[in-house]
Length: 103
Image 1 (cartoon, rainbow, N blue to C red):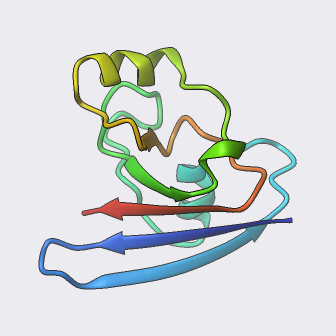
Image 2: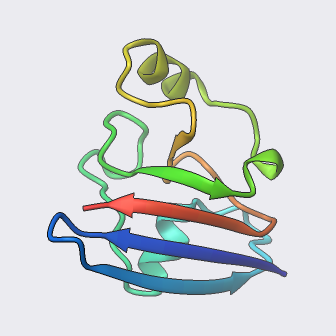
């Protein structure tokens, strides 16, 4: 069972923390798993990997994530993603993961 910790950080300094436990057998995206719990993580492109509104900072667990997708590599090359960021719509966590989403 994976434990997903999501910190939503607002511009005014306020933070909200959420914990989701899942075995994620269908390999749903972090964005979809969060939405099931009422946590909106970006999504301007509908989870297609075409924007960066769902980018999250990976604070723990990056070693368990799959390699960057083509979209993430392109955004990284354009400097729209930092090396410690991933798109929540493109990763399907199966192990413990901690992320920060800045709203």
